[in-house]
Length: 280
Image (cartoon, rainbow, N blue to C red; front, side):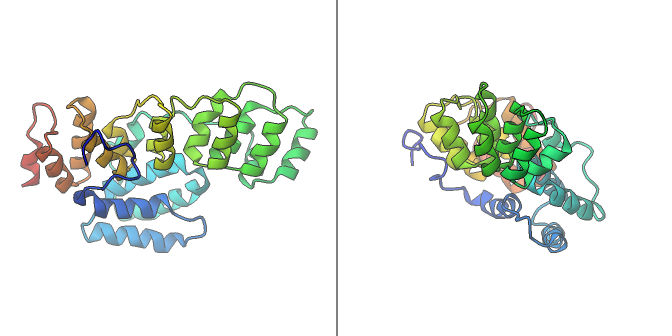
């Protein structure tokens, strides 16, 4: 398929070199809240011990998933703790130094717990007992957590500007929340990168169809282990730049030398450094 014909990230054929990494990445991104933490940790450790992936790969992946899946951050922290007993976290953590959109929300733990549980009745009682004030931070948290019941209650009773909510809604991937905000005229133009970071490629495709600003690089896709997006960018053609430098260097630090070799064959390498020598 030519780059001119390639319009959808979801329809891209992932390069063979990425498929094994993609399978493991999707296991982590799709982790369910009720999965057994020890068993899941053992699975990841078995992949590391079999040299299928490296511990650096796992730690970087879990870090990013924790950012964009707040409902499972506790479980991700526990999994990290278990794996850290066998493998030392890297001093240079690429994922933690990547440029992610700020998704922090500063509200009390009580209101955060109510929204986490998506309890609109408890939320109503809380607001009534708090002089009836609905803050934009409440809506941000509902969007961030994908708490649709709380979101609907809040959006019906809030009369302020809503544009700040777009990035939180895209990060959670709740399509109903995105639809409601879109109907209310919220601008999603600058949300393509966060859709890639959060592995919501169906939303990224929707943004592309609606001429959203594409401010995302192949490195952004690699940090999030979004292999459909990586394959998409490679097929579209990505010029050598500092983001590609970071990508190749990160892949080498994660011992993904088959990926480094593949990127080298595609013409991507760290400027002035023969990375391929480390793959021999």
